[in-house]
Image (tube, rainbow, N blue to C red):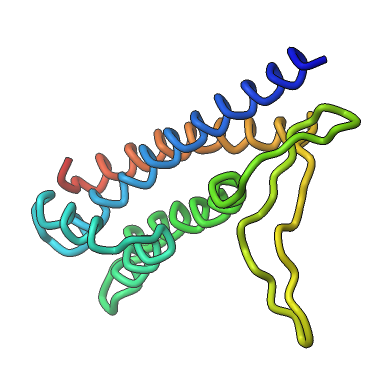
Length: 165
C-alpha cells in the first residue's frame, strides 16, 4: 500500500513541477510585451519584470500599458486576451504552490492543505484541505496543456507585433 501512496505522490509532485516550469516559462514572455509596449529594450523590461514580484502585478502592468490612450485596438485587444487567459490559468498554479501535502489515510490520495488564513466575520479558518484525486490530476494536466498553447500563441503575437526578443 505504501508503494501506491508513493507512486501517487510522485505523480503529483512531477506534475506540479511541470506546471511550475510551464508557468514560469510562459509568464516570462511578459518581458517581451513590456519591452514592446514601453519602447524599452529587453534588459530594461527584465528589470521591470523582476522588480514586480507577483504575477498579478506583472499582468496588471502589461494590461495597463496595453490600455493606454492611443494604443490601437489591434495591439491592445490580443494582448488583453492573452493576459486574461494567463490570469485564469494562474488559479490552479497558485493552489498547488501555496499548500502543503499530506495523504488521505483511507484512499491513499494526496491531499493539499491550503496555507492561507480565511478571515470570517467572527472567526478564522485555517488550512482548507482538498483531495488530489484523478479529477484534480486531470485538471492540472489540462492547465499544463493550456499553458503550452498559450506560450506558443504569445510567442506568435510577440513576433507579429515585432516586439524585442
